[in-house]
Amino acid sequence: MADAGSKAARGQRKTNLPRVQVLFGAVFPLGPGKAALIEAVGRTGSISGAAREMGMSYARAWKLITATNACFREPLVATSTGGPGGGGAYVTDTGVEVLRRYRDIEDKAVSAVTEEVKDLSGFLNEAIDD
Image 1: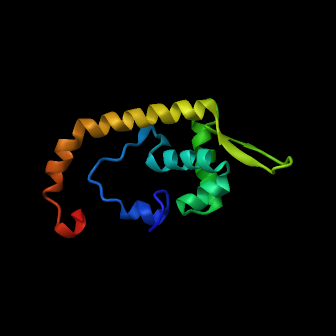
Image 2: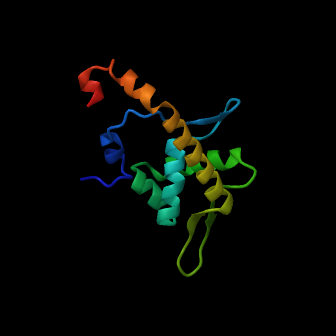
């Protein structure tokens, strides 16, 4: 079975819940994919490790993190180079706080519409709802 963070596992999840993306004007700084990627950086200590865990290329992960960091006054993910253990990446204090607030928004949004989404899913084809 695929681990919960992998691309295969994400595709296997059965959910009829909304996905929350936070938009500020035309800027899309944070959504479920970027939040999961940043959390994966926190778990793995590297962008490459997070990319592997998420089933995406390092270049894609780097691009997403760079774009997300550019939307905020302070970076959400920072990197370090060299040293005895090599380089790495970590979620900054700002990143921890932004993720906490994003997950809070997500939880509140899901709680607010769970019944309506359940009712709406009754209109789906059975193959889609599986």
